[in-house]
Image (cartoon, rainbow over all chains, first blue to last red; front, side, top):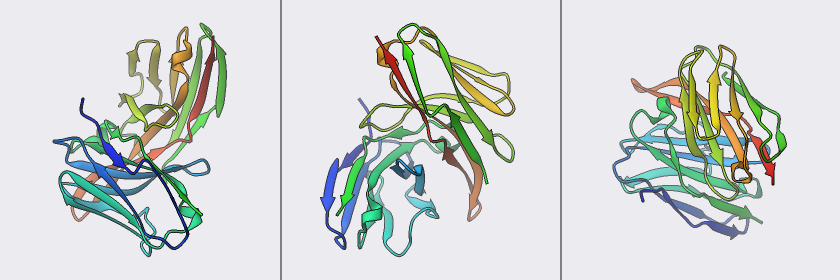
Length: 116
Length: 116
């Protein structure tokens, strides 16, 4: 059963600490997205990768967020230093090349981050 | 800037009571509209893609329709297991270094609760 795997599922940390979230996309998918979901803002796109190259990271606060794909089976989202306003659920999604046009994104179960 | 508005924010139905959810959009040239279902503690799950006005898609008790200004998700004779948040999204055509891609804008969602 192919699925997107995210770790950790839950993370509680203190302000100023580094947080790293990991995502294993579905094998064969070459498009990876990072989204953040909050009650106030809903789902916001943070980063968009195709074939491991970043196409769009305009939704990320550049001073503290970074996203990478070290290889085709791993995407990472790092926050350093973390702040309470970063508390949210972070979703990774993967799809085939045209997923942004077809809408056929496969989401992971999310990483719930709480920054105290 | 593309905008997506969903209504109502929340909808409570009795089992068997049919109804519709609305997704209205403001985009510069519609390139598709997508519907997703999100269960509590899970990531969104892709349901439908609609590309042109007049198009309809069905899946079990769900039918999605599209006009030039809005989309409806009709739920016929719902069951408690249909309870979830339903999200719609539209893609914006974007370009990065000569590579075009679709960047999704999500609505805030409609929380559907079906009582037995």
